[in-house]
Structures are given as structure tokens and as C-alpha cells.
Length: 243
Image (cartoon, rainbow, N blue to C red; front, top):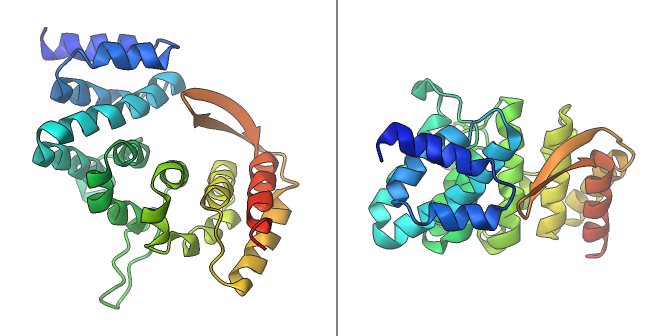
């Protein structure tokens, strides 16, 4: 099967509702061929194709890492490069796909979680300030989803790098998806850094708990519509349980 045919075959498979069946079929193909085709899927306009591509990308990259770690590193570096202005690309789906890959393979998480976190942080004059802050709200949406996903599977990787300090500013975003997913990530981390930070974060979450704007949330292979208020309320409950 040629490259173009493989791409079309993969995109056709991504239209399936059954994610488990989709993963089984894609596992029959060569990982590198699947991954190259999935790069078209993770930025697809159709949301089910896009999210299914992100899900199966994680497993494909993890399998590749088991065979050839350096080849898997090249894939993650390709995702990172797509987020840079110099790449000429946009980076749609890159943070989410990186998160899925790191969920599926601890070795990749050990090496690349700090790079993903850096996209939440601004660069600065000090040597340790090595951020790569993403200004585009669409990319921030993907980044907030990615942090929430990692909070589910690699929580200690995030907490050991202080990501709980980076999330609260996103609660102030004018974008419903960004602030909603930031609230969700805070709730999933279930941690407070200092009493002062906790009090401010609780106040922000309380404000968002009345925000009825909606967003699309993908988790466990399914898409659903939720409100900012729903996610903020759940996060508020998780944070207050720590008190």
C-alpha cells in the first residue's frame, strides 16, 4: 500500500465510532506509516477524526519507542517544532498528541514533560526562565487539555515540576475552553501549593462556577458538551477537599 493509500485508509478508519476497534486495526500497520498518516488526522477539521487521531497517536508512538526510542524522539521533536513560529506551521493537535504519547510511555514522559510545560511559561532574562509561552488561544486549548490528560496518568511528573503554579492564570482567560480546561486540570491535580495561592484559586473557581458558557470535552474516547461551571464546580470540590 502506497503512502497516499495508507493516509486515506487511516483517515477512513478514524471515522469509526469504536475507538478500541480502530486501535486494533491500526496496530496491524507499521508504526511509522501510521504516525505519518496520523499527523494529518490530529489537525483535521472534523472533531471525531481529530480526537481519535490524537488517541491512537499516543499508542503508536509508544509502540515505536519500544522498538526504537530515537525514532520516537524524532516524532515528539516534530510535534515540538510544529509549535515554533519558525516552523511555518500552526501546531494543531501537537500538545494533545504529546500528552497521549507520554501517558502511554513513561520514558517519553521523563524526557519531554518539561518541554510541554514550558509552553505555559514565558521566557525571561534569567538563565532558568526558559519558557515558550503559547499566545494563540486555540493552542492554549490544546495545552490545557494536555496538562489535564497528564494529570490523569503522570501526575507526579507535573507536580515535581511545579505545574500547579502555572495553571491559575489560565482561569482568567476570556476563552471558555481555556479557562474550563484549566479548571479541570487543577481539579485533577488535587493539590494546593500555598494557603495564599489556594485562597485565590478558590475565588477564581467560585467565579467560574456560575459561568454557563459551554465547551467540547474529549475523554475516554468520547466527546461531550460541558459548561465551564460544571468543570469549575468539580475542581472546586476537589481543591476544597484538601483543606
